[in-house]
Length: 188
Image (tube, rainbow, N blue to C red):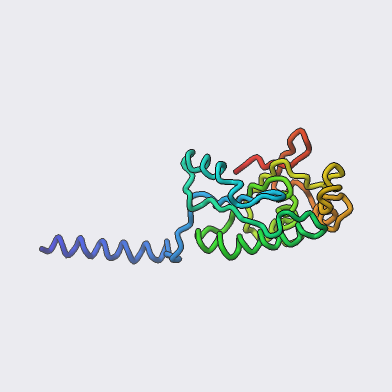
């Protein structure tokens, strides 16, 4: 009986010591950063269903994969990416981080969603607030595009969005460029 009391005392001391050195904040931090998928012009969150399934098949937890549906996605009007950048920021702050308990996210953005993402990073402090770890832009004209600006005026190189993005370092944290000049992050 005495050995059981001593064993129980050791367990109690171990729990107290562990709680001092390793306090439980009540939020478990996930093993990976959650991924936020940002679609392009005329897309939606469902545009990423196949990609999300590929991540799940590779062993990624489904509860760490988020795809945002941006508003007014058929609009290319000047300034729409400013609106979308705010939506990305709010989605990360109000949905992804609280649901996952994570401190940072990774972003994978496609096409015009890449421009909105870069505007969020640079003009809305997404790159400096510590909430974004890595970004991958797929086929995103983050420097603007003369080819598409006729149809999507917000991609014109002289718009406030593109001008704001172009004034900042396009390679924060060490980003690689693919042969087409689009940005790609080496780590995700």
